[in-house]
Image (cartoon, rainbow, N blue to C red):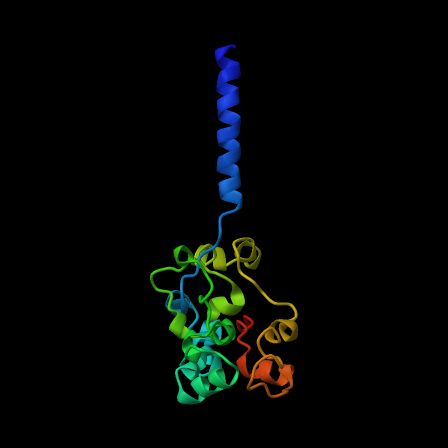
Length: 182
């Protein structure tokens, strides 16, 4: 075999492996503290403040109450609510994510936070990328076109404390658009 063919036979599989690794790269979670500096200003619509005042920011803390533990127990769970998968799946982000994908500032205790709805932010968190909606989305930002459908993944009768509410009315309490430039 010629050296060129041997080199080709070695390099093609290596380049394929490298390209597959890049394509299958998973975005990682950075945590609300990484999002906060840019999303706390009036220019950004005080998005951090809206979240901090919402029940979403307290979602994990509600699992640490005796009431939550009693509900979990009534449902047949043998662990405290704050350790029960059935509770965690809607009260926190990060409970079912491999540890390697959780950044050093990410805290599960932040409850239902930015990346719960908008996806892991490692690859869209920079100002340069965030200036372009298209680039942000290409780098993992999730923008829900149908918020009602998404919200119902947690706010549904599967929850033992579910109370039927108008999702659009609830959405108006937590929506946080960037104000239009004048």
